[in-house]
Amino acid sequence: MPEPPHKTLLDRDNPPKIMAERYGPQLHLLTELVNYTSNLIPRAFQSSGKDLRDVVVCFTLLKQLAVMLDVPNCRR
Image (cartoon, rainbow, N blue to C red; front, side, top):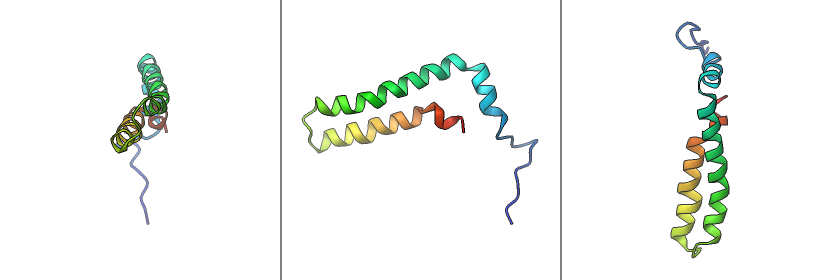
């Protein structure tokens, strides 16, 4: 039977609220960077030579960067 987290030691509800209150401008900047990166991926591939190296860089590395910075995923 799985145990619930100890609320005093592991509070999963408050940290996203505290982050939004204290780091609002920084989170907004990260959101804007992720939005820009998500639009950069197709533009970068469109202007590339479209070989395997371009596919790896555009759709793997840039996508991973966007996913790592994706603030909405941190707010869950």
